[in-house]
Image (cartoon, rainbow, N blue to C red; front, side):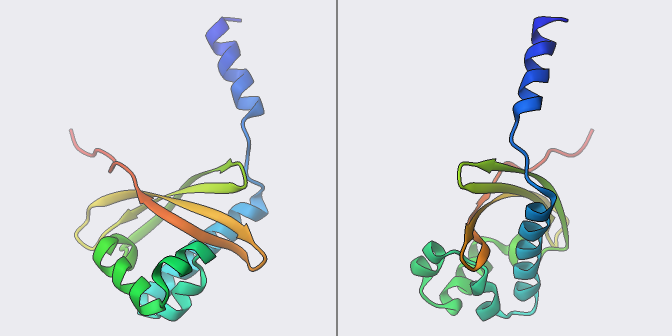
Length: 134
């Protein structure tokens, strides 16, 4: 075998994976929070945030204001597609592609942590948008 192929194969075999149950639970938390945003139910949306996020914003209203102003594609996504999830120590990074109401695509990375209350969102980072066109 060629050295590069062998190295790639070895990396794929030892790459950490997310168990299907964890994957479903993480996607469920993100989906439930998005549903709460669509309903303007910031109190429920806030329950899916980690203790760190809750401490940063203090109230569901302040949290909702931040999401409306800083993450309009999360506040009102037109379409949501879950991409890959990968473990990173005691956290999981879940990538999600969202189409906003104007039709633009956005890729976000959700940092998820497992707490006594289950999986919670510990942060969201906007990644570079996918390039579309000829």
